[in-house]
Image (cartoon, rainbow, N blue to C red; front, side, top):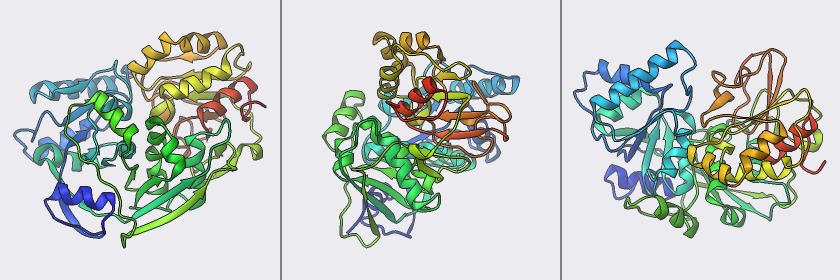
Length: 415
C-alpha cells in the first residue's frame, strides 16, 4: 500500500499507482523562487527560448534573502525579478516588505494538502507540514517548471519518525528535530521522504510542525511531511480557498521505514559547529557567545517570539553580547507589535530588524566576524554560514537563544 509521497506523486503524474524508485513526470501546483535564486532561473528560462510561463497564477516570488538591497548586485537582482513579474503578469509577487518565503507561502494561502510544490531553495520542504509534497530544486530545473509546469521526480522511500512522549518544560519542536538529526546523521535520510507522526506531533501546532519539516533537508531528506489533521484543515481554510486533497500513509507500505523516537526525557539540544548533526544536550555545552540570532524560516514565527519575550521580559542582554531579532513575516511583526513583544526585545537591548532571512545565509544583516560565536535559531551551522569562515555557529530553540542572550553564554532557560 502507498505512502503519502507515493499517493501525491501518483495523482500529480496521472497514474493510478506509483512505487518508490519510479521516475514520474509530475504536474506542479506552486513554483517559488526568490531574489537570490530567481535571476539564475530567469537566465536559464531565457536561454531555452521560452516564450511564456506556463501559469502566472502558480508562480510565487517573494523577496527575502537580501532585503532591502544591501549591494549594487542585490539591487540589480531585484530589478531583474521585478521586470520578470511585470512582463509575465506574475500575480503572487511579494516585494521587500513581506517576509521569508517559507513563511509567506503558507501564510498567504498558497500551500494546501495534496499539492506538489517546488522552490529554488532547499528549505522548501517546510511546506510538507501542511500535507503537501514540497521540495527544493535547482534554478535550471525551475526554468523548465516556469516554461512547462511539470518536472521529473524519482519517487522517494519514506522514513516515518514515530515521536512519542510529552515534552518537558522549555523543550520545543526545535529540540526534537535537532535530536533526530543527531541520531540519524546528516545523511540518515538521503532522498527519503521524512514523515513526522505520533502523539507528540499530534500535540504540536502547525508552526511547530513546520520546524520539523523545515529541517528534513538537514538529514538529507527529499521532503518533510506531516499527515493533515483538524489543526491543518483549520489553518488552511483560514488562509486559502484552493481545493485540496488529504493523503495519509498506509502503514503496511513496503517502502516505509518506521523509526521510533521517545522524547519524554529530552532536554534542550544544541547543534555544535560545524555540522547540524553534531548535536549535544545543552548541559554538555560550555560556550560564551558574541551574538544571538532569533529568526529565520525555522524559528521566526510568533510562537518563537513569545517564547523568547517571556524569558527576556525584565532582563537585559548580557554586556558584550548582541541580540538580533527578525520576525519571519510582516504579519508576525505586526502581531508582535500588538502584543508588546517588540517593546520587550528593545528594552532588553536587542536589535529588531524588518522581516528577512538576516544572517542565516551569511550574506546580509548581522553576519559574524573572525573568531566570533553565534547562537542561532536557524537551520544550518556550516563553516562560514553566517559570515566569517573563522567564526562558529551553534543552533538552538528560541527559548535557549533568549536565555543565552541574558547569560552571555549558552545555557538552558531557568539557569
